[in-house]
Length: 336
Image (cartoon, rainbow, N blue to C red; front, side, top):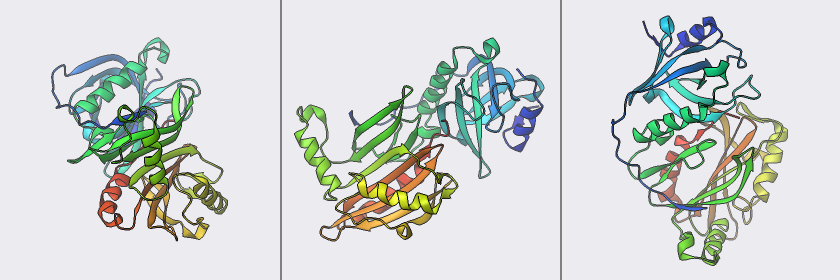
């Protein structure tokens, strides 16, 4: 009999045998053609199973528009796609040289990480990347995981190996100073705005530079997501005193979150929850202009994430609700 994904999954696994500028677009209409799909020889583990030699299940993975079914004999597992919040790809705790498709699953208000990989050749099969693409395509087709959004918004997933978020469907985005580490865009800034940033209309980038300057001065509305390496004391479970002091300096020196805003004292940050982590909020207003910053900060897996609304005092009332919705939709990849 199939086990439903809950506390019993962890027990089942423990007992198992070892074995540039972009115009945002609307999603295509879903279709069930080509489903179900079956991938043979797939391994499954939890986020707490240590290493590639740790406890895992092995079987055939059947992918349907509604669920993922691992057929593993007496320990079959069913994962409803509606319970999958994020699909990412990378290493898991305990592994140093293997990559997994990592599912962040939420059931009954509890989060759990589930890893999937090609189990052939003792777990070193070369099709784990293909498995990731199949699952990601399925999620996109049926508006699941990070591709789930609501009317008027579009799921930003261009860098969803690191984060995903809902943004206004008719806005443009600009990737600023992205940094690649081991082939993955690990750090950098993404600017979402209704300002004209399209390269086709601005071959020399002069209009784009003026628009970015207006955003940095708080004279135009934009949402900014910046990822950088977390310092000591910056973790998912909170920020210590030293980290708060360092965070104030980071914000003050950032071109999108700093001047002309006043420097942020450690006491100015208020605790908030962001994607299941103990995050921070800072609201700051420029003394000489009408610029406003509503900033959220969170750290996970050695990465510091800053998500800010830059706008004017006049535009703030009309922007706040949509920005809160975006922050609530923020999904941070759990892989490292």
